[in-house]
Length: 243
Image (cartoon, rainbow, N blue to C red; front, side):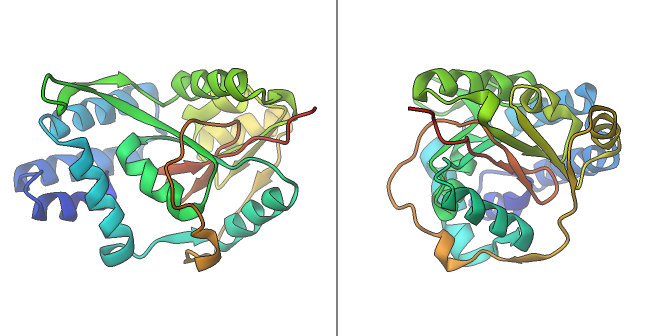
């Protein structure tokens, strides 16, 4: 949401005061260890700022922004990792604390199989009602991947999860192959204590056209999250099911 502040301002969804408030929230979040208190502040800021928005308009703005305004970048190492899992026949899934309407266009651009994001409640007119119905963060991410493991028959013990934030520990603990990437201090400490692999991604590159494969709607969530950028989005997927 923070990345699209200008677009939301230009479209009349945000006021200049709201942009300043959100920028302050983002700064405080980036300077913290993303603890529960900071995540609650982000959650409240998100709910307050989006009250009255039309979900379809949000998705349109994000979709147009990804092709016209924002220059999408993904770590080269992440693109290689996505390609490796595709070659192995694994499902690719995004699990993100961002709103569903923000995650969907990015999921389509990356050509992933499923995604899960934060779901806002709706008022009688179908607009955002100013509160969050399902917060896909922390325990919410673990809940989401368990639900889709049941739905699609994924074996979580054979699945992979990637994250850069200690708030994602509940998700990482659900899978058999957790990996941390550019972790915050708390997550690095946990990874060292648990013997989890620690990767460093350092080469952001433009999103490759070969990844822009999905054109239709995609739904759901799988069992892996691969962090891209500064904890704004997670890209995830699950391992091949046993038959």
